[in-house]
Length: 424
Ligand code: AMP
Ligand code: GLY
Image 1 (cartoon, rainbow, N blue to C red):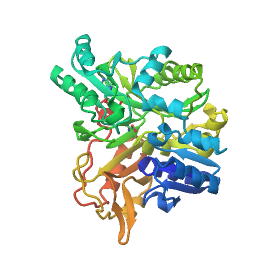
Image 2: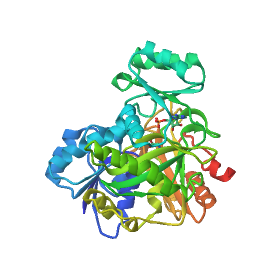
Image 3: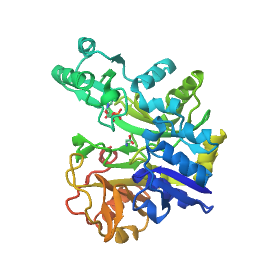
């Protein structure tokens, strides 16, 4: 098959890499891709949010399948635009993508569907929002409604912090239109986990649970990032929880959307908070694969991947189609010095071949590009180094051994990936 993957991060390299393992020979394209995708696919120089450019490339090149990585093109309606041209695309339509694009929409769907989630109130005027803080205890969570590249959630420990977050979003416009509406939400305590569910409009198949590491420093300290590493399975989600999550979280959302005339096809990512008592609450939904969760979940899928995506488009997805390997997987993100603050680009990367030669290890590129002298960094999260192992400890050790072979001046990575699993 001729397959186009949209996006340029570690998630998209993982998608390209996994599709290249399929038993049929695909011809792969990645728009815009990175230095890693370029080894397995032809990179197409069109930005992931250039919908018109992508459609015009696809009309000319007629891919049999397009897989959308990031949320921005989905929220801009890339799936609708491709479908209108008779092109097959794996990813939800614009109306369904509001599950990530609008936290107030997502909350209303969850409430109507009876999905367990934090209580929230929604405001557009700062004085009303600030008054409403009386209805919440501390800490309290303040969220911008729209897409804010992962920065739109503030956990306020004090009333002053909460008020200043509300003012900066509603009066200061720090997130622009994305912050024109805010949610004030009850703080949930517990351990987070990510569930990626494949959905074909009606049926859902849950992929194994994973856990991301959002804070930049070891011990979950420091500012939030796009994700510094991940592992799967995540033991906080027990085997018996998966069917519960399917029945009480995933399917109710699919059915509630259907009631509203919206068909969900693609991946639905549920960010969950698992309480100490085993309670399950939804923190947020995303309408795409997670990054870096994809770098640990896709290596665990056995068999062919493209037919699974096609079944989601055609409405005939079954549990039997999705086979999971028993090995555990871990990924370590290597970031540029200074990330998630300001950082330098164009730093040379050495040791990629030595790392790639290790068994059961895959170096996924995220912010990289080719330059005359070789591969250089082009982003904050530079690589995600994944490994499989017979158990989580083996996978984590392998990933770190591979990271040790890579040289990127000034870079940093977390040394404690999967610590919560090991502390259990
Ligand atoms: P989001 O941008 O929606 O993914 O949220 C970012 C992060 O904020 C989540 O991964 C959680 O760590 C945290 N968060 C969001 N909502 C809550 C909540 N109600 N209680 C506690 N933490 C939350
Ligand atoms: N790893 C978090 C996300 O993809 O949103």
